[in-house]
Image: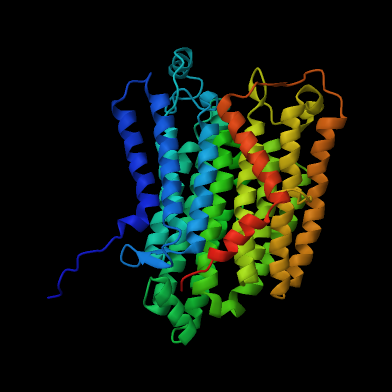
Length: 506
């Protein structure tokens, strides 16, 4: 009879994730036992305190070297810690935005338009369960890029996804549209999970192992059935491509972006991408690196289609949130360029790009929450005409983020695109670079078109108003603007920091 082996967890190395899980559980207890008047301030305080403490823990263990924890199911290395830090920074500024509960339903479980919902609004009720849901999602995101076996990776995928399905349906206005987006996001996630599990099963059949090291050894040794390897890689990749919103797996992503509460859209668009691409980078750079011949052509094709499709379709959008959704799809294509590069420069550029893009995305959606009329947010682009004359501060902030997305010099987006395309060019992936540059030129057209609309058009008669941002939203926008400009003017400190510690443990 085999002897039971007591598990060794290395709590110190796992502390960033454990802190967030603990904070989420405290949030659930507050929901259960605290009075309704105390909940909002208690939840915001616990959530922000948890995220800051987790970020401190990431900084504390940055010099611990490349090692494993939780019986080898988690890898703690430079890229993993950088991605965790990025997720936490993005989560912190997203929570400032989420804390403006004007965006959320008064009673999430009430039927839209029902007497129960009207009573809840009249009493001034606030949904506060969004905060523990955010922490559970962040905990899953922190685990996703550092998982070192397929089972842990799948658990992390579900932990990060399930809270987001609920959060997408919590919009205060357009309740039915919000609930539709939640259902669509759930179905997208179900497809993603199904493909992921199917791929994991084939990879286990190929290698006889669910650990990344075991699968990599089988790929290097060439001992298994190559058909199993190819099917496993294909389905695992599809599961991850659903999460990053790459074409043709983007399906309902724009609908989800449009229907979800804008602060939740900001959080999903930025943090989920960091986590999903973090996992993709680890898998393709370490596990499948020796099988590049089999996945590189297909991933190159998907990257090119994603960049071109996202940029072209964004031109036709008249809704700000849908335009940013298709912009996000195009950026998924740009980021796939870093995966295809398969070199150190590609890894460094991808991590930099994920952080810079994530911060700018949260800032852009934060601005969207400020442009309103009596019915709530105004996302019709035509009604943004003349915004620069009515509110120069808001319009200038939005223009800064759009210029960063377009990759204009002196913004973080230019450095990100330049770095990632340079890495791809070094690796010989010239077709992706050409497609990326052309797509960036197309994208620049619709970004600059919005800037022209805001600053050089006269306001319409039914002009929208710009609400005075609360201190929390102001912090989010100001932080995002400062980081976007600073990383465009002085990128070297962050790029050097990334380059020094971004080395995967194999």
